[in-house]
Structures are given as C-alpha cells and as structure tokens.
Amino acid sequence: MSILEVQTTVNYEFIDNNFDDCRGIVLPGGTRSTKTIGILQWLILYCRRNNHKHIVICRDTLKNLKRTTLKDFIELCYGYGDYAAHASNMTLNKAELTAKIGTNTVEFIGLIDDPMRVHGLKSSIFYINEAVGTYKSSFTQLSYRCEEGFLLDCNPSEPHHWVYELEKREDVKFFRTSYLDNPFLGDEQVKEIESKEPTPENIERGTADEKEWSIYGLGLIFKGKDIVIPKWDTYSDDPEGYDVKIYGIDWGWNDPFCFSQVIIDGRDLYIRELMYGSHIRPEDYTDRIMQEQYLMDGETFVVCDSSEPKSVNALTENDIPAVPIKKPPGSIMDGLKKLNKYNIHIHEDSSNIQDEANRYKYKTDPKTGDVLDITIDKFNHGFDSVRYCVLAYG
Image (cartoon, rainbow, N blue to C red):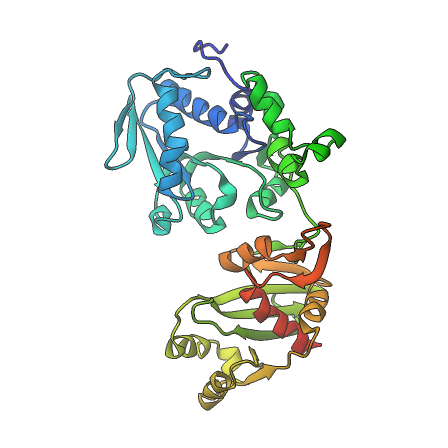
C-alpha cells in the first residue's frame, strides 16, 4: 500500500521510483500486465499531490480512447476495482473530453482523429496509451511542449516501431511486464492467456499461437519469418553525401499512389515518402513531382511502374525525366532480395511506408505454415516504388 492507501501495481511503483530521474518512461508488456492501470493510477495520484498541472492522455482514436483508457480513468477515480485511486473530486466534461482533479486539468485526445491538435499543445506530462498505434510525429510535437516528462505503454504488436527506438536514449527508462505481474488475475484468465503458449499440450489442442504468446503473453516483440522487411529504423535528416538519389512512383487510384525519394549511400538506403494516397489527380502529383529541383535539373530520374505507359509519357511531356521499369517474371523477389541487402532507414515522417514495413508479408502455406517466396499484394505500394529504384540502380 502507498502512503495514500492505494493498492499499487509494479508498474506504478516503477514510475513513482524513476519518473523524477528521467525524461520519459515506456512500459511495453503483455495483456493484463497492469501497465495502463499503473500509469493512470500514478497520474491520478500525481494530481492529488500537485496543483495547476495539465495532463494530456492520448490514444490512436477517440473511439478507442473512450472505450478503454477513459473508462479505466473514471473507474479508478471513483473507487471501482482492485486498483482504485480514489479521486472522488474528479469532474468530467464529456463534451470537451477534459477532467478536473482539484486545480489540475486532464485532457483526452485521439491522435489520428485530430493530428494537428498536438501542435502547440502544452502539458506538464503526457501519456500515450497503446503507442504502437500512433505516429512518431505526434509524439515529437507533444514532447516539444512538455514540461516534465512522458509516459507510454504498448503491447509490442509491431515487429518494428519508433517506440522501441526510445530505448536507445539514456534519459528514457523501459520496464517490461507480463500477466505474471498482475496478482489479481483469476485462474480462468491466466488459463486463457497460457493456452497460447506453444507447449506440446496446447499444440495438440490447437490453441497454441507463437505470435500471440510472444506479444500478449510474454510482452515480447515477435519477428516472424513472413515479414518482408525484417530490419529497419528511422532517420530525420537526409545524409549530406551519398552515392545516388533516385525517385520512384507506383501508380494507383483506389490503391494508393506513391511518390518516394530513395538515397543510396554505400550499404545504407534512405527512404522518404513525398506523396502517398488514393484518388490523387495527375495534375496534383505532377505539380508535386516538379517541386523536386534536383530531379527537374536532370541530376537524376524518376523510375515508374511500366504498367501505365500513358502516365509515364505524360510526365516526360512535362519535362520530367521519367523512365519505366521492366518487370520480368521474378522481379519482385529479385528486387526485395536486393533491397534487404541494405541497411534500411525510413524517414520519421513517412508514416505510410513505416506502416507498410510492419504489415508487408509473404504468403504462408495454409496446410504446413511454411513461408512461401510469394508476397501478399497488400501494404506494398510504397515499397514497390522503392523496389523500382533499387532495380534501376542495379
């Protein structure tokens, strides 16, 4: 029990013991590991100890925030459940999605619903729940204007994410937990979680799932062999010196159109999406392409999907040095093998290509589970444009 007579969690204790000594704390963990409850509990008690503070609590969407994080916050404040924080003086403004605890304000935000809201938003502390569902640019904007520090939690459900890169920072502390750190779980809940462990018994029963067990049972990153881009990180500034800069285009209308920049420097490959989206009109993407002065000066060229020769010709008619890429049988695997020989860096603002890197996969044999040398034709439009550049470079 804490001095405030609250039943605390191991995650709460870690925050309380370490928050004053660092810029931020990240709590990756499995399902039911008390990471979210621990953070909310600490924030509520922080408000009981302080005055005139502004707390920002975020998640990917308002719908998910109301369904989970906000619901937990209200229950903790009003004394429900095993980990009640007892802030009975909390008042909630449902219209504005703000709460008052004494003289402190708590603001709730859906980051993807309203991405511009974080620009200029000041806070004493901000908390991003399930941070792997959010963009690094939102975190960066919140961090710029945060006075004291940040708290993040997540199930490590993506094999690569900007959240994990924070572990490299000396001023950020990580604390991993699993369901085993929650003493209040019932036997049936534990049994359900442990049914995913790939033991001989669970395999025979058909409940075993290596990925589910790794992520939600143990709270560990799972990197399956079906991931097309298994290793990558992010970067912020283009390298000053490099071997070549090429641009790539993958056509699309209902499927996304992607215009990307690829810089190759030795064994390092830097990817930046310059335009990405559906229903982009030719005049719009042509105007955007012509803004790349290095390209328009003839210092390089843009490599295009050869499936739309009229679109390629339309670019050349605007004096854009555009060339179609040949796509003989086997060119997809050939390009991906060449691509994965590089150290891949994706610009921190290129959220769509980062999303593709996490979701672009090979097919698996439904009978054997073996990974095949055939890609699933989804979440690949940005990487198709990059692959064309790599194939053109040789």
